[in-house]
Amino acid sequence: AVDQEKSTPRIRELAKHLAELIEGFAALIRRSGVGREKASAMIRRALANVELRLKVHRIELIIDISQHDFTVKCSPRLVISTIMNLIDNSIYWLDTMGDTRSVQRRIYIGTSDDITAGPAIIVADNGPGFLDPPEYLVEPFITRKPDGMGLGLHIANEVMKAQDGSLAFPETEDVSLPEGMDGAVVALVFGGSKK
Figure 1 (tube, rainbow, N blue to C red):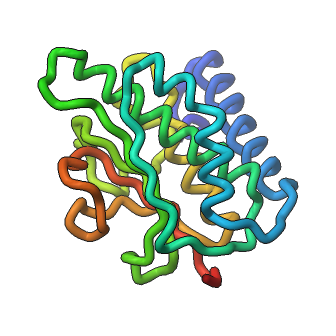
Figure 2 (figure 1 turned 180 degrees about the horizontal axis):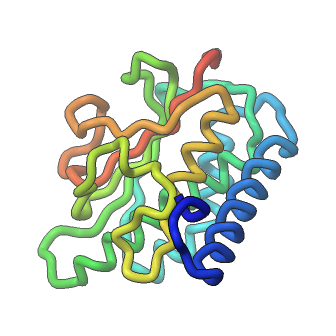
């Protein structure tokens, strides 16, 4: 569209830069090491990297990885980074609600077999939730963050595609969640995984 429209040279330059940026992410996904990894191990490694942030933001973490753990062939580094990105998103949106609420701000992370497409890692919170339909959430450059680039969920979606999986946005009643987790729910769904 930029090439067909009478765009300024600056707009054409920015569009080219963004296309190169996305292609760079795709190359990174293709080159990342693949191995067999337990979902619980990836969750623990991601949480070790965000533990301090959760404390600083006074967010309670609820973990449930005991009942539905699974092993998957994937790029653990990319999955761990994706989990961290989802937690960062939850922290951001929980922070927009401030500390005036009478309910403790919480993030849930766990494993699940509630999704028919395959076993999943679920990240949920009790924040404001998503305002947009799921198909728009993974589109590049769409964001509701005032200073956001709109690439986080798009990259998470691409990472999951590279793992032969998908990024899903189940309704709170479609997966087993602790009571009160009525905000955003995101599932990293893996295909072809084994218990």
